[in-house]
Length: 310
Image (cartoon, rainbow, N blue to C red; front, side, top):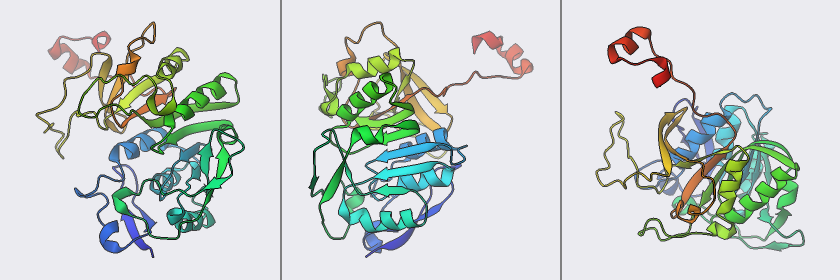
């Protein structure tokens, strides 16, 4: 069973149709107050980094679920490779592959080259997903991290931190060049901020610092941060927001991203174990995201500012 549904990414993304493997009532919950999926913040990051691709940018999606973000990346012009082990999404992803939307691999990522196959249930957004359950093969991560990757998205609700560590090693050893990584991390106590998380999802928190040493900028995306909640006029309606963390520089309306936080670079990784809270996503990128601002000289004179103040 599947129904056709139109997904409307935030502007300037273009609407596109997907096959939703469930009944219409469930599928129509997406992008409504009843279901936070697909996450707008992820759309924003993809649009900001892939907007001007001409099939010469490679987007790799580890844990592409029912393929919504992979489809969005294709609409933006990227070449797309999508990995998903849940068999309930296999038929629709294979159909996308036949239509040349992206290359689909029915496989789970493994850190062990000798793993064979197993059954995966995984995460089903809004409870969506009807279909047969069959074992999925594994693909060794080393085979994924090759060539030039414009954007790597990792969201498997499992060992993302371990994958990030291997990405760091592969980049250092020049097996792969990854311009940007969007990854969900953090398994601390959601209700107790600044919980120590030294090994987020099987990784090492010092990897974040190591990426900074390699001239990557690290942004925390506005997910599970209890930050601003904007209405349609751009007003913040979250009166109970958490006070800003001074280790982050607040950035608003950066490219197509409404809000992000730039992690300040430190001389040592001590203290990094409290920079992540439950379920937060990070953008690790070599792309210059923040551009100098220019204003009309008349406005600068009235404000008694110069271009060097901005």
